[in-house]
Amino acid sequence: MKLERLLAIIMMLLNKRRLSARELADHFEVSLRTIYRDLDAINAAGIPIVAYPGASGGYEIMESYTIDRQYLSLEELMAVIAALKGVHSTTEDKQIGQLLEKINALLSTTPSGATGSQHPVVYDFNPWGSTPAIAQKVNSLRDAIERRVRTRIAYTKIGGQSEERTIEPITLIIKGYVWYVYAFCLLRTEYRLFRLSRIERWEVLAEEFLPHQSDVDQLRWQEDWDTGQRKLLVLRFAPAVHVRVRDMFGPEAIETQADGSLLVRTVMADDEWLHGMLLSYGDALFVVEPAYIRERMRETIKKMHLLYEKDQNVDR
Image (cartoon, rainbow, N blue to C red; front, side):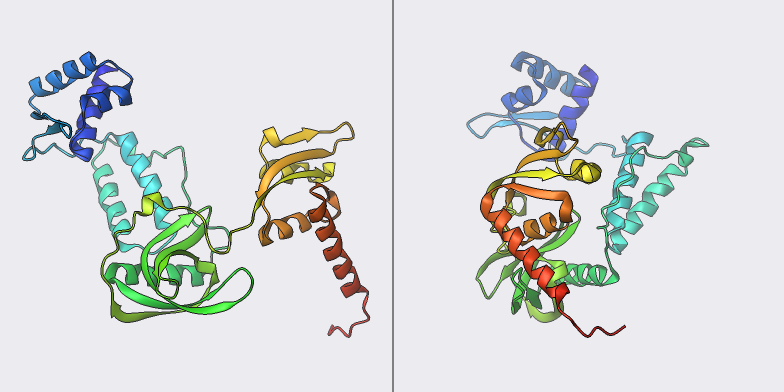
């Protein structure tokens, strides 16, 4: 355990530069005395650690010092390959492809049989239903981000309204199997998330823009089309859809009734997605609460009934 902690301290100092003894002690859940002993041991091993006093002080590895990067084990290299393959599945990234080739070349020098080993986890970040059109948008927007040029898009909001926007794309994001581009919108003069599936047309312009200082790591996942107020829902599902219900809701939200039906209590945003999701269960769902959502469901079902009751001339 001590050896693993020493190696972890070295990696943290290499990656984060300066850290205080208290930060290290809290991270590894050990005493300050233990951390001081670890730092002395690292120094004694020939890795120079410099101490800086003061409020912004701490410990860091001497700037001119470098460490041999060939410290990754075979298992760690296989984990890197598995993750890179998952990323590579989402876009035609030449850099990632070249990196995969280099790492595979490293594995070719391992003992016989090692290269045939398989990582126990397969990562595939390619969204379900992904089409070549999405890949085109991803690659085109990535090119705009790298060249730092503006892009004109035709964007459709959740209500169906289509608007022309000129954006300064900052980064591409895949979250929940959905692609987004985080960009500065010149129309709204603020940072926005745009869902790629709602970009009908796009044109990469020749207009360059200055780098943005936005902190993507602190991005709040609140979009202009996802502003529904969160509501407590009580839903009763027929036994026939129990597998689908358990796929969607956590076990803590589900209560099995004596007749085999499932009573679900959950909190969800009241938006267009919720309405469509509830309707997708057909007659296998009854909305117990709130009453206004149950009434909205009833009105939609009435309209659907009238639509199909009409004598329409349908091409066959």
